[in-house]
Image (cartoon, rainbow, N blue to C red; front, top):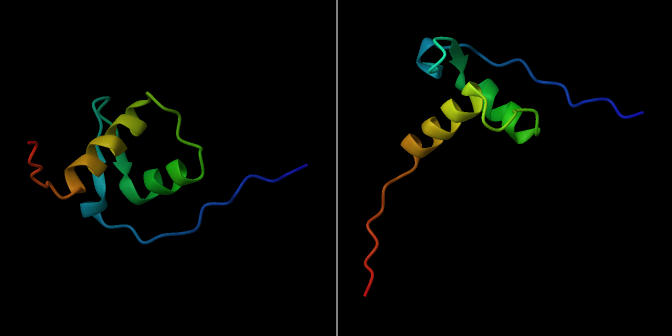
Length: 66
């Protein structure tokens, strides 16, 4: 029987939190870790918030199409 991967302790900073559409506060480093472990259900408010945070953190690059 396999044991699920454990989450490691991480420091907490209010800057690492975001409020989801459901009104709950989420800790983004924890969401990233849950996603990496495959334990974040797609379509949930937490998953959607993480996708928004990742999209906002990605550098915007212009792409020329000929």
